[in-house]
Length: 151
Image (cartoon, rainbow, N blue to C red; front, side, top):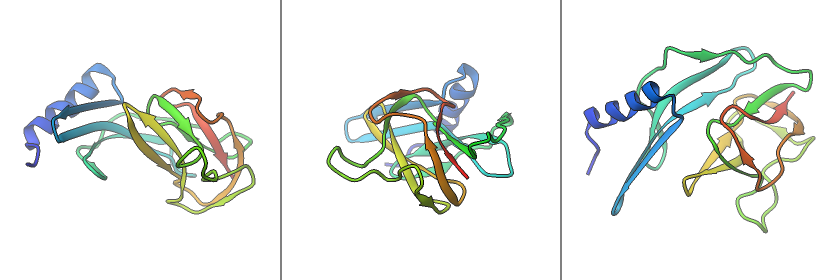
C-alpha cells in the first residue's frame, strides 16, 4: 500500500515546523521515514531538503533554508545528515568503506549512519581523496557534524 501524498506532506511539514531531521513510523510490515537530507558539493553550500525513504530516498519538497559551510583547509567536509551512530564499514568484520588517503568518486559510499535501527549509507558528493576521518567507528554523531574531509 502506497502512503498518501497528504500524509507524507504533513510529516514533511512537522519536520520543518519542529526543526527535526527525521521522522520514522512503523506499522506492522509498513514503514515510512521522512528526513532532511544534506547535500554536500565542492562549490555549493550545504542544502537541506526533506526526503521520503521507503527502500530508496525520493525527494518530497525543496526546503527554503540552506546552511552555509565553508571548506576547511583539510578539504570539503562530509557532514552527518542526521543524529545516529557512525560506522566505517558495512559489518564489524568487513573492510572500511574508506580510509585516510583513499580516493573516492562522486556517489561512492563513505560510511553508514545508523539512526532508529535503519542503516543509512552516506555518499560522497564530490570526487577526491579522503584527507581525514574525524569520527571513530561506533561513535555517536550529531546532525551537521563533520565526518570526514575530501580534497
